[in-house]
Amino acid sequence: MSWRCSIIFWLSNIGCFSGQVLADVKLPRLFSDRAVLQRDRALPVWGWAEREEKVTVTLGTQTAETVTDQTGRWSVKLAAQPMAKEPLTLKVVGKNSIEVKEVLLGNVWLCGGQSNMEFPLAACDAADDIKSADFPLIRQFGVELTFSQAPQTDVKGQWQTCSPQQVPGFSAVGYYFARKVQRETGVPIGLLRSCVGRTNIECWMSQETLLNSPELEPYAKQMRESLVDYQKELAAALPEIEAWAVRSRAALRTGELIPLAPTWPEFPFGERRFRPRCVTLHNGMIAPLVPTALKGVIWYQGENNAGGPFEGEQYIAKKRAMINDWRNWFGDAELPFYFVQLAAWQKPHDNAALADGWAFFRDAQRRCLTIPHTGMASALDVGDAEDIHPKNKFDVGERLARWALANEYLQKLEVNGPLFRELKIEGSIARVRFNHIGSGLMIGRKTGRAPTEEDRTGKLQRFAIAGTDKKWHWAEARIDGDSVICSHPDVKEPVAIRYAFSMNPSGANLYNHDGLPASPFRTDEW
Image (cartoon, rainbow, N blue to C red):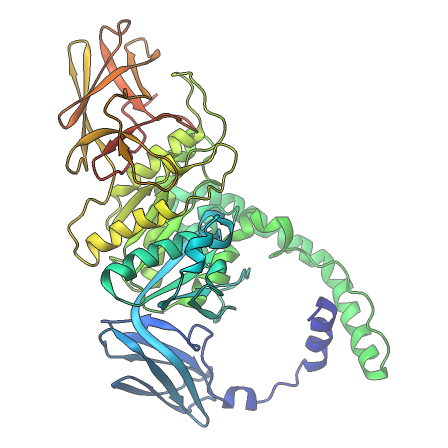
């Protein structure tokens, strides 16, 4: 439907909606054929009907009844049920009845973030994976791009079953995550893909959180100013809009052509969506999913926030605020939140002293692990110097899956590459110790999607060392048990170490024997 046809439809129906619209029981699009709903916990189901209408909901062995409120909304919570691989039917009965078919009970994961989460499998040079993608127990609901000034009650989208025909449009990260988890557990997996490219993390918080969190005040100030600007623009445009509406209604009565619409203030559309008003993404693409039951969140975002050294510190506060916001909205204070550390990008350099915004940002992402019930999958070694959208989403998805398999399915496996733990100065030597060393540290070589290989003849690279003069030098680094020893002839009294601290730290090669890369880090505060 074109914009003009939409306007004609809108004009012709103003004031014409009757109670009959609410008389029919309705469900959000999330409850539609081929849905995967959350197993093993109370299951919210909601919708709309006529005011004070009795509604009965049945799924599997559970039934619940309620009566709609004065706005026509109803909601129930079905008692928890175990996994269901065989299709069920969700039945909703009021004055009419609805049957949602081929419903599975498994684990539902919300896939959020920017374009690297949105990036489809079809763009990954993954012909063999697409051809073999016959996994009827994996399904994706793709939330369509929607901006809104206020929290919405429904989203646009549909459930798709993982097949060679449908999977090209799946989130590649989501697909590889789901494939790994489903293969190893047998549990049906539902992916709720809700992400938009070129968006700041601030876009995904509720307006209440953004405007009322002291640590977010700089951005909140911009947003308030932006909203004031919008109100001024709207006030200036309203007289022409109202006059157009009068002329259009007259044209509809006489059968004449509808006059061209005036220019409307762009709150949700066009490039302005990336200004502070973009909190509308939460309104349009997260709020309508509430209160669906989730198993957890996987998150790939940060490129838009990785601007400079100070943003890194701010990002920790922003991420904590957003995670707490989502946990509050979805009613789960311990909702797992597993995120991706940014991949390498752009031309590498050999200047030990040159750090950029992405370096500080990755270090901030590492420190976001202090937020409870979070995990991080590093994509550092699978980046593309020429493309901010690296095509190797296989390793990213599988590394995220490790967190889910270990924490939600209690498998015993290493979830992370080496993470900085402490720095010890031993004369002219700096000793760095790590967590997540797994079965030991190693020098690794990663080529494409192939498993990381140990490089027994290689040397550790991308460790930088500085003394009291704060001048950085490439360190002579070697593995010593569960630590790395760093030194340099010109640094007699070392005080700080950095590792892989640049936008594209090409050659960084510290891994554990599980093949997982060490996270970039710094020990200084310069």
